[in-house]
Length: 74
Picture 1 (cartoon, one colour):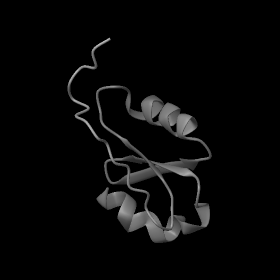
Picture 2 (cartoon, one colour):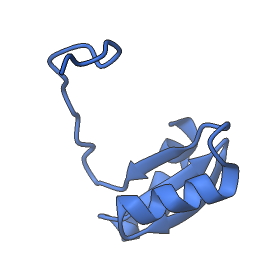
Picture 3 (cartoon, one colour):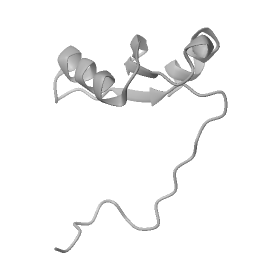
Picture 4 (cartoon, rainbow, N blue to C red):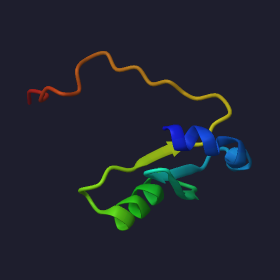
């Protein structure tokens, strides 16, 4: 998140796109979340974490009302 926040002023002209962050590097921006995820996985695979973050002027905060760690009973 720190790398994203530092780069945000230079990304502001790409509002609505999705940035891919690997470590301290912005790999690129993409028009859809799916495209950004594909690039992230292609770049680092499944063993290294990466961030896909929507570029917004005001950050949208998502709230979850239950634990996402536990398995959902079916």
